[in-house]
Length: 124
Image (cartoon, rainbow, N blue to C red; front, side):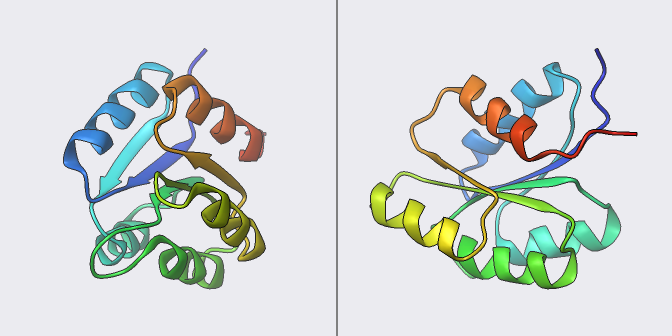
Protein backbone atom coordinates (compact mmCIF):
# COMPACT_ATOMS: atom_id res chain seq x y z
CA UNK A 1 0.00 0.00 0.00
CA UNK A 2 1.36 3.41 -0.97
CA UNK A 3 1.49 5.92 1.88
CA UNK A 4 1.23 9.55 0.83
CA UNK A 5 2.46 10.99 4.13
CA UNK A 6 5.20 13.61 3.95
CA UNK A 7 7.87 13.01 6.60
CA UNK A 8 10.74 15.33 7.52
CA UNK A 9 13.68 13.69 9.30
CA UNK A 10 15.93 16.12 11.16
CA UNK A 11 19.25 15.00 12.64
CA UNK A 12 22.81 16.26 12.41
CA UNK A 13 23.93 12.69 11.65
CA UNK A 14 23.90 12.37 7.87
CA UNK A 15 24.20 8.58 8.14
CA UNK A 16 21.18 8.29 10.43
CA UNK A 17 18.99 10.54 8.29
CA UNK A 18 19.94 8.50 5.21
CA UNK A 19 19.10 5.18 6.88
CA UNK A 20 15.77 6.44 8.24
CA UNK A 21 14.86 8.08 4.92
CA UNK A 22 15.62 4.92 2.93
CA UNK A 23 13.61 2.75 5.34
CA UNK A 24 10.57 5.04 5.34
CA UNK A 25 10.69 5.45 1.56
CA UNK A 26 10.56 1.65 1.23
CA UNK A 27 7.30 1.83 3.17
CA UNK A 28 5.80 4.39 0.81
CA UNK A 29 6.46 7.61 2.73
CA UNK A 30 7.67 10.74 0.96
CA UNK A 31 10.75 11.61 2.98
CA UNK A 32 12.67 14.87 3.24
CA UNK A 33 15.78 15.43 5.37
CA UNK A 34 17.36 18.34 7.18
CA UNK A 35 20.46 18.44 9.34
CA UNK A 36 19.53 21.22 11.75
CA UNK A 37 16.50 23.13 12.91
CA UNK A 38 16.97 26.12 10.63
CA UNK A 39 17.24 23.88 7.58
CA UNK A 40 14.11 22.00 8.75
CA UNK A 41 12.05 25.19 9.03
CA UNK A 42 13.26 26.30 5.61
CA UNK A 43 12.21 22.97 4.07
CA UNK A 44 8.81 23.24 5.76
CA UNK A 45 8.23 26.61 4.07
CA UNK A 46 8.80 24.89 0.72
CA UNK A 47 6.97 21.60 1.41
CA UNK A 48 4.13 20.83 3.81
CA UNK A 49 4.89 17.80 5.98
CA UNK A 50 2.65 15.60 8.09
CA UNK A 51 5.24 14.40 10.61
CA UNK A 52 8.62 15.71 11.73
CA UNK A 53 11.04 13.24 13.31
CA UNK A 54 13.75 15.27 15.03
CA UNK A 55 16.76 14.60 17.19
CA UNK A 56 16.81 16.65 20.38
CA UNK A 57 20.56 17.32 20.52
CA UNK A 58 21.68 19.23 17.42
CA UNK A 59 23.91 22.24 16.83
CA UNK A 60 22.42 25.67 16.06
CA UNK A 61 18.87 24.80 17.17
CA UNK A 62 17.96 21.91 19.45
CA UNK A 63 14.93 19.70 18.90
CA UNK A 64 12.90 21.31 21.68
CA UNK A 65 13.30 24.75 20.10
CA UNK A 66 12.51 23.34 16.67
CA UNK A 67 9.40 21.64 18.03
CA UNK A 68 8.23 24.92 19.56
CA UNK A 69 8.64 26.69 16.22
CA UNK A 70 6.80 23.90 14.40
CA UNK A 71 3.92 23.88 16.90
CA UNK A 72 3.65 27.69 16.52
CA UNK A 73 3.82 27.80 12.73
CA UNK A 74 2.35 24.42 11.76
CA UNK A 75 0.15 23.22 14.64
CA UNK A 76 -1.30 20.38 12.58
CA UNK A 77 2.14 18.82 12.06
CA UNK A 78 2.98 15.96 14.42
CA UNK A 79 6.44 15.97 16.02
CA UNK A 80 8.33 12.89 17.18
CA UNK A 81 11.48 13.61 19.16
CA UNK A 82 14.38 11.15 19.31
CA UNK A 83 17.53 11.08 21.43
CA UNK A 84 20.09 8.80 22.98
CA UNK A 85 20.99 11.14 25.86
CA UNK A 86 19.36 11.19 29.31
CA UNK A 87 16.47 9.19 27.92
CA UNK A 88 14.13 9.23 30.93
CA UNK A 89 14.47 12.98 31.46
CA UNK A 90 14.34 13.72 27.73
CA UNK A 91 11.14 11.70 27.32
CA UNK A 92 9.48 13.49 30.22
CA UNK A 93 10.51 16.90 28.87
CA UNK A 94 9.55 16.03 25.29
CA UNK A 95 6.03 14.98 26.22
CA UNK A 96 5.57 17.90 28.66
CA UNK A 97 6.63 20.36 25.95
CA UNK A 98 4.13 18.95 23.47
CA UNK A 99 5.86 16.22 21.48
CA UNK A 100 3.38 13.84 19.91
CA UNK A 101 5.72 10.89 20.55
CA UNK A 102 9.21 10.07 21.78
CA UNK A 103 11.59 7.36 20.56
CA UNK A 104 14.84 6.56 22.37
CA UNK A 105 18.06 5.88 20.45
CA UNK A 106 19.11 3.32 19.57
CA UNK A 107 15.81 2.19 18.13
CA UNK A 108 14.54 -0.36 15.68
CA UNK A 109 13.35 1.31 12.48
CA UNK A 110 10.09 -0.61 12.88
CA UNK A 111 9.60 1.17 16.24
CA UNK A 112 9.96 4.57 14.56
CA UNK A 113 7.52 3.54 11.80
CA UNK A 114 5.01 2.47 14.47
CA UNK A 115 5.35 5.88 16.19
CA UNK A 116 4.80 7.68 12.87
CA UNK A 117 1.69 5.61 12.18
CA UNK A 118 0.39 6.34 15.70
CA UNK A 119 0.63 10.12 15.34
CA UNK A 120 -0.45 10.35 11.70
CA UNK A 121 -3.94 11.43 10.84
CA UNK A 122 -5.41 9.06 8.22
CA UNK A 123 -5.55 10.44 4.68
CA UNK A 124 -9.17 11.05 3.66
